[in-house]
Image (tube, rainbow, N blue to C red; front, side, top):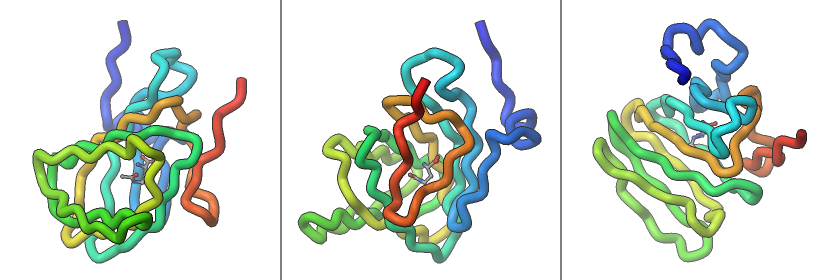
Amino acid sequence: MKVVNLKDVQKSEQNVDGGNWVSRRLIVKDDNMGYSVHDTVIKAGTETHIWYQNHLESVYCIEGEGEVVTLKDNKVWPIKKDTLYALNENDEHYLRAKTDMRMVCVFNPPIKGTEVHDENGVYPVAED
Ligand code: 9YT
């Protein structure tokens, strides 16, 4: 059994500032759960290019509003509190935050917990 408190994660290296977002990695690869869980705040007024080619991600918005634009079809997906989007096809997208957006993110496979996006909006696969 493991209990994780946000305040403790915020004081650790699992608190990562990506510029447009701050991500608190609550559960990471070393926890051996098969996924990682993050509490992420996307900053108001930002647009972030993201393309997780190595990961599937579900993102549940619990505060705020914004939109996702999927690049393959230019579709705009409004996202607000109580809405989940799933990048089930490794979808390349822009994430635009109208207000601060607080997101609970689940990654498969899990990330190590200290990653920031590379220039293509990608995380590498965490090796053993
Ligand atoms: C929603 C999203 O993908 N934001 C970028 C940061 C990422 N979720 C993370 O590392 O927690």
